[in-house]
Length: 461
Image (cartoon, rainbow, N blue to C red; front, top):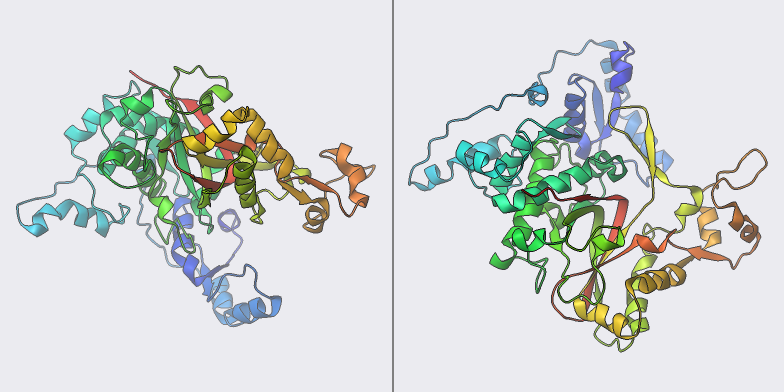
C-alpha cells in the first residue's frame, strides 16, 4: 500500500475499526503518515462474503473521496527519532507529594512509553550503570525492531531494562534475547503485528541463570520477590518491543484480546534436579556455557497429571494437547514457512512450530526412571501425536513439480490414496521442546509455538 502510494498511484486501505491505530502506526513507520484509509466495523477474517461486501459498500463514497482528493500532510507522532544516534534527555520534577512521586510514570503514560505498570525512572546514572554489564558500545545496533523500525541500540535497551527493574547482572540475558529476536527465523515482525495472541518466551540455560538470580524452582513462572529477575527480564523485553519497536497496545500491537503473558516471560531450566541433560547441550553447547533461547508462543495450557503412574500416562497427557487445530497439524508436508530477511526481498525458510513443554522435575523423573532419555520422550511424542493425511490434504494443495510429484516428502505421496493414513503432527521430534523447571509437582505447561526458534550464547564480562 505504502509502496503504491510512493509510486504515485492513488490507493485507499480498508481496515477494521479496531485496527485504525495499528494502521496509522504502521504507515508512520514506513514514512507515509498521510496514507489514506477507511474503516469498517469488523475484521473480515471468517466472515461471509455478503457481509464483507455490505461493510465495504457502506464506505464507497468515502473511498471515492479519498481517492480523488490530495490528503493534507499528517505529522507523525514518532518524528524521526528512529534514525537519531543522540539520546534525548528530559527533566522531570519529583517531590514528596503523591503527584510528584508519580511524575515520571505520568510523563511516560502521556507518551504511551510504558506497559501500564509503574516503572523505575531511567536516570542517566542508572542507565550508565546498566551498560557497564556489557562490552558492547552504547550505539551498537542489535536489530531494527518493527513495526516502527526503531534502532535497538545497547543504550536504548539499557533504558528499558532500568525501567523494568533489571539489575546489571541480568542485562546480558536481555541482550541475548534480543540477539535471538534479530534472527530472521524468529519472524519477529509477524509476532509484533499479529492479531493473534502470541508472545516471546525466554528460556535460559547455564551458569548465567544463578548469576542473574533467575528462579528455576517452585513458582518459577509466578509472581513474588523470588521471581524478581524472571519478571524484570521478561518485562524488559516487552518494554523494548513497545518503546523501540513502537508496538504499542492497540496501535502497533493490534492483538484482538491479548494475553497476560505479553507482559513478559523468562524462565531458566532446573538443571540441578533434572534427570536429563539441559536443553542447550542438545544443541551442541557445553554444560558450562550460558545460552538464551527465544520461542514465540501462545498459551499456556496446563497439563494436569495427578493420576499418572507410568511414563506413558504422562506422555499421553502431553500428547492430548496436540489436537489444537494450529498446533502443527501436519502442515510440514506442504513445506517450511519463510520469513523476510531484514529489509530485503529475500526470504529464509525455517522449521516450525516448536512447542515448549515446561515439565516439572518429577514429570521428567517418571520418564527417566522408566529408562527414557529426553530424546526417547520426544520420539514417542513424534510417533504418537498424529493427524490424518486426509485432513492435511483438505486444507490446501500440496505443492508438486512438473511431473506431479510432491515437492516436499515425495516418499509419502503413495499414502494419499489411503483414507486411513496418518502422519506425525510435527515434522521432527526436536519440535517437542522439553524444558525442565519449577518444583516437583504433577503439573506441566504446554505452550503452542507459532513461528521459529533461536538460541544464542550469553556474552558475559
